[in-house]
Image (cartoon, rainbow, N blue to C red):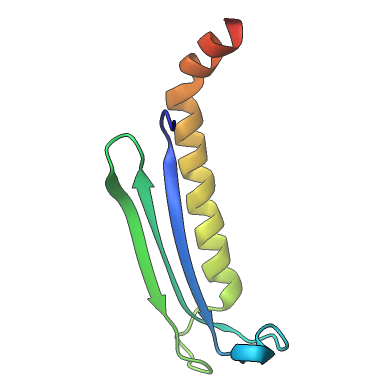
Length: 94
């Protein structure tokens, strides 16, 4: 049973090869989407879709997309810890 927190679904597409050649090359991310769902309320708390165009001057580098995702995940984890810290302490003391 899940008592609280968030679930993140992540979808990433690259410009790389597919099928039997999947993973044989390293290409840039061309599409990144994620949705964060609050488990207690079953509501979407955050979502983002980023479609990139390779070699376009306005396309954010892959590293910026990944940093954004990691920063968002860290913020949600910190929020979850601050909300649940009393529950965790009471469970640990039992």
